[in-house]
Amino acid sequence: MSKYILKRVLLMIPTLIGAGILVFFLMRLIPGDVCELRFAGTGLYVDQEQIDICRSNLGIDRPIFIQFFDFMWGFFTFNYGESMWTGKPITTEIGLRFELSLQIAIMATLVAIVISIPLGAISAIKQDTWLDYFVRAFSIAGIAIPSFWLGIMIILGLLIITQSMTGVPWMPPIEYKPIWEDPIHNISQLIWPAVATGYRYSAVATRMTRSALLEVLREDYIRTARAKGLVEKVVINRHALKNSMLPVVTIIGIEFAFLMGGLVVTEQVFNLNGLGKLFVESVSNHDYAMTQALVMLVVLIFVVTNFVIDLTYAWLDPRIRYS
Amino acid sequence: MTTTSEAAVEAQIEELEEKTPWTQAALKMAKKQPVGVAGLLVVIAMIFAGLFAPWLTPYHPEYNSFEHMLTAPNADFWLGTDQFGRDIFTRILYGAQTALFVGFSAATIGAVGGLVLGVASAYFGGMFDLVLQRVMDVFMAFPLIILALAVVATLGPGTENVIIAITIPFIPQCARVVRSNALAIREIPYVDAARALGFGHARIILRHMVPNVMAPFLILFTAFVGQAILLEASLSYLGMGVQEPTPAWGLMLQGGAEEYAESAPWVAVWPGVAISLAVFGFNLFGDAVRDTLDPRLRSR
Image (cartoon, rainbow over the protein chains, first blue to last red):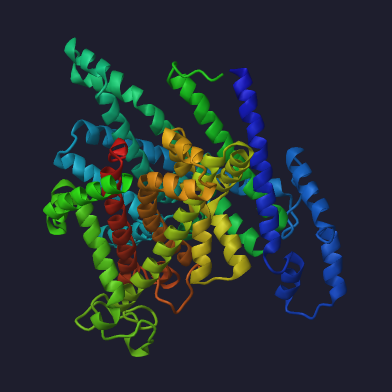
């Protein structure tokens, strides 16, 4: 087991280095750089000398391979440097927004679990009834409806409903406050994006729960459980559902990893200042250091999540032993 | 000897085929897969809307009419007009062209690219396979939207570049699935037989392996079309996709939609309905294709 864990951890390194190479050269392919952009923003005449000074201050005039080595070395020694645009430490900039993105990701995952497991189970138990068809249509709709449009519709719905009920339209608060400072304010702001993304992610998990449960329900031990006179509720809850959770856990885990880096559009709709917005800003500001750090963070979350999922497998299903 | 028996078999097959004309086959399919056929109808309706847009509406999709800005839906403007006075119904019809173009080209390039890489990876194995799989790992883990952002920032926004941005994540997804299928096929004796007969790599891959991974390929292809339409809408909504004044559904939701959401909700509602319906149709159809081609994966 420990040998397997070591092997898996070592296999993460090529993926991380590969992602590093990709983001490093991708960013440098974009025409222009942070110095040109900064001086262009002032609207004043700038001579080449000033741009050169700016470049040498940021170290982007050095040979490209030295820059790359520097970036990779910094990553593996936990030294991320400063944002090239704001000059603040990258850990500070990410730290400010990480909390918000993490909270939405967790809330969206909870929404997805609460929707998907009961719905998927009902759909499988009542296979080929109108209830099953309804759940399947509901989950395919979740994949088809763009979450940003669902977000717009939620805001629109809130406006219309509160207008007709209280006479004053109500909008979710715009300013972010951490949950331990003002829980009501925090939840009333973040629940909507969590629902919009959570519905989308629940769709995939519902379908997975349904098909996994259907497979398990055909197993011999379910027939045995029924034959020995167990109540159907016990058969489903204790014997079937538990054994069908393996692929569902995988899907939920992978979706969670995607949520951490993939909320760009939802943050735009709800005007949230999270990691997604920072991503868009740093790419359009040519902030190499910041974009690189963000990509590495998201890829790291992705590979670690995948690793944890594999370990959960062994825990959920004692038959699986990695060697 | 072999040729005669082959001809005989073919004749038999033709005979069998003649007994079930396509209308009957379609009916059979409709009975077996009612949901899939519903999806197919949506897809056909969308293709129809895209192809015959100029005949279905009297307006031009890019024509601004300032006396009709933000008109509520009425007899002249069925779904109302946007902040530039353009008819929303017209722009949705023409938007189907953009969505279909992006959807089909991105799905084709992505799925074919993944097919070639996946089969080659499984066939050659060894170092080639190992390196290629690590590269695919990187692309799978890499945040898609950042890839798209960088591609658009480098090449500039525009329909063709959106297709490139959308295609990149499709290739590893398809390659991964095709590879695992092709690995199983490689172990079947007929591949060894082909090799023993002295056929070249290209011939074995194209004639003997590719046709046998067609089922997962087609399943992924139909899924990709829907995904591509959704991704294009997201990118256009962010302002990094299709550019004004080209009619595109995601673009119609950008800018105006949120600002005027309260006073003119039709601007925000209808393009989203169009996106959802189109992707819904492709997904339903894709599910039916999957159920038909691969019974093991039934209704996942």
